[in-house]
Amino acid sequence: MQHDIPIVIRNIFNLSAPGTIICQPSLKEFDDEPGLESFVKGFATIDNLALVNVEGTGMAGVPGTASAIFGAVKDVGANVIMISQASSEHSVCFAVPEKEVEAVAAALQSRFRQALDAGRLSQVLYFDCVLEFNGFAIQMLAKSLI
Image 1 (cartoon, helix red, strand yellow):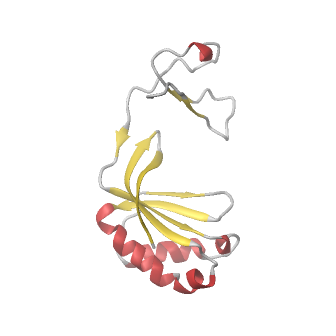
Image 2 (spheres, rainbow, N blue to C red; image 1 turned 180 degrees about the horizontal axis):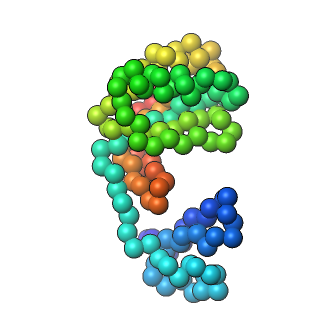
Image 3 (cartoon, rainbow, N blue to C red; image 1 turned 135 degrees about the horizontal axis):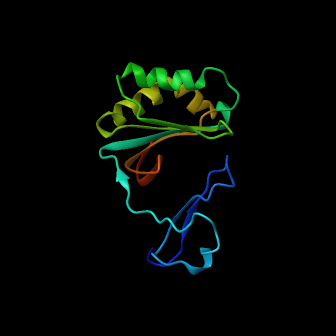
């Protein structure tokens, strides 16, 4: 907001929907767009969460990858709050309680050690500080690369 650059969030599955705009209170260039007069009134935060991202070209089209990821998460008793996967199948991102993220990362590193060493998986990342906005978790601060 510091530089008055508006952010427009659109639904790619319903392009006729007006979307949501995050901007300063007055934005004249969007006045002719239907539905954009409703501005964001606030944000909801989810405290003490972390994002985990597992990525690599060797994940695409390989049956059982998600099962192996979430099996490792289950084995450490972690609770998954949210899951997101890119349509390319090259990454899976999910949110877990911050207190469980290091155990989850260690379990994933152990479970996928051969795939990581062989280059089928490129990395397992985890991040602190998640802000939720209209159902989207936004990574705020990188913490570690395994």
